Length: 69
Image (cartoon, rainbow, N blue to C red):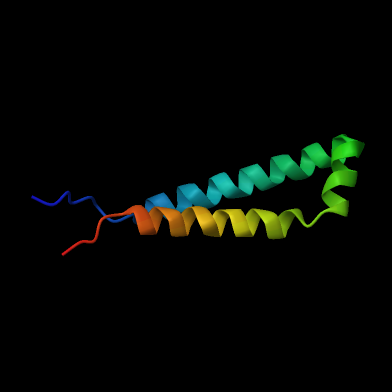
């Protein structure tokens, strides 16, 4: 029998959104307090790297998931 998991809903989406906002706010505060981190973030395309890595992780999870149906 196929493993049937519940689809994520609004509650999960809001929790993930809140977690992302907290992580970004903490990173902004940390880079503001530590000058070497501020220089690293300002001199490298961190946002692009994070987006590419996040996309790869999501695609990897989708590809590894067995087909349903």
